[in-house]
Amino acid sequence: MSSPRITSPDSPALATLCAQLAARADAADLSGAWPAEQLRLCGEAGVYEWFLPVEYGGQDWSDLDVVRGYLALAAADLTTTFIITQRTGACRRVASGENEELKQRVLPALATADNFATVGISHLTTSHRHLGKPVLTATRTAAGYVLDGFSPWVTGGDHAGCILVGAVVVDGDVVTDEQILAFVPTSDPGVRADMPAKLVAVSHSHTGRVQFDSVLVSDEWIVAGPVANVMMAGRASRPGGHETSTLAIGLASAALDFLKQEAAKREELRPAHEALAAEHAEVVSDLLAIAEGNAVCSSESLRQRANSLVLRSTQAALAAAKGAGYVAGHPVGRWCREALFFLVWSCPQPVMNANLCELAGLGMVSDG
Image 1 (cartoon, one colour):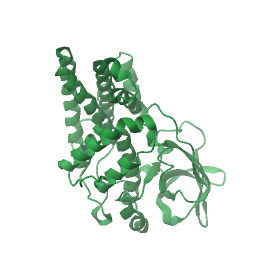
Image 2 (spheres, helix red, strand yellow):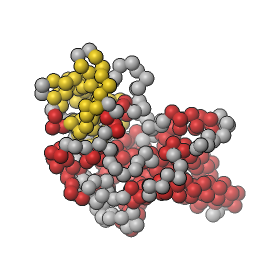
Image 3 (cartoon, one colour):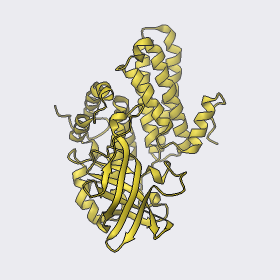
Image 4 (spheres, one colour):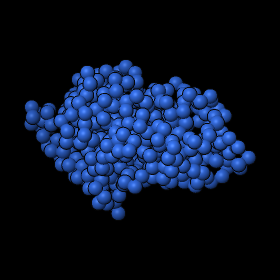
């Protein structure tokens, strides 16, 4: 069964797609199988077009519309939506880079469900940076760059046709301050996806390590660099930094919808639902304002509040569900596990510190 095409976040087709995703979410969580059918439905509905320029087959949605779309998708099926963010990250990096030939070659196919790409860049931002030696290096040769090492957290690496990876440039035995981004076909010799990690939640995202053993990447596959802080190079002009918060807020929506249904039957639940719903409305309002370009709060403050809200909302839903929610296969238990993901997924140290303070009973840290 195909999904109706979505051309705006107000389209009834988005609600139809979300219903299809939600109906499959619990079974996918239990099985651990790659959500191929869910991703196909999203592709047929035009979801992958939201993020790409029109000249490459995209719809080029505004940041506000993308946020509204993500909120709906995350409430329906967090794992599939998370996978889409990784796919989108790869596509947007290519689209905002300077390699015009690469854009023409790969982006039109990535606007459809026929091809899947993902990213392996966490080691340049938050993961494994405490280690003295880069986990993935790029050595310049006459034929291009040779990649050696691994990318620790790659979503769907065992299903991707290409991976957008970041590597630190080395010159002989000297580690330089330059980095590159490369769009590497997984069919290249030396690219190997390890067995996906068994995670507390989102395991069917098939996130795990991808190894690169003397992988030659010619210049035609270079997206950005060599340059210092390559993650800041070639960035799309639209504002960002709130994608992870958006997914957390979307998941909180699902939990609060459940709590609202239970509160309609049980008076004692109404005060908790009303308080959390009011907080949710405030966070959504700030998120949408930021998406429109109005800096009503910092991205770190928004992330801190989103993390706090999703943890408390999902646990409130579990309390309302009682023992039934603690049985494997109930969505409330899944939501609680998924909420924990936001404590570790691309979580900056200031946000982590703020969340730790709240968990320790020291209160929320102000935005300043």
